[in-house]
Amino acid sequence: MPTGDAQRTWFPDMIETLRARWNVGLAFAELIELRDELDTMLHHIRAERHIRPPLIKCLQCGHVGEAAEPDVTVRAMILSVGRFGMVSAEEAKKLEERWAAYRKQNGLDLYGKAAERAAAGVPACAHSNLSG
Ligand SMILES: [Zn+2]
Image (cartoon, rainbow, N blue to C red):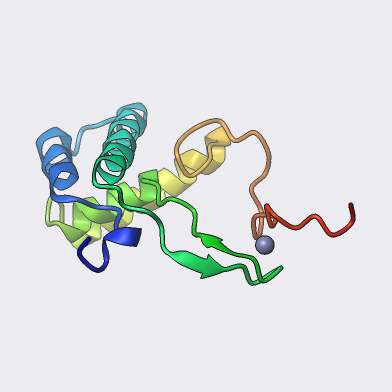
């Protein structure tokens, strides 16, 4: 496995798909659909190449285990559109701001899905079971 793949989110195939499908007129609903597709591609590529997340030590409990799988968020997709030159940095910035406003207004999570709970702060440590 080449170094850096463990946490890699953007593989060349995904960038090609993004380039092919991206256009400035996309509605947010379409952006969210595109994100779903890219996210599926990401997990497919990683599974196919047996790419695992790096081992990390949990800062809360000291547990050593695999980091969470990387995901494609709508914001990351917008930033990539700017980073890979599909729009100017300025346009990407504006789109990012519009997305943030849209997301807030519609109570969506990072993936453009209806947020089930207010995702505030640090996610709870999944393996701490100290009170049991
Ligand atoms: Zn932990």
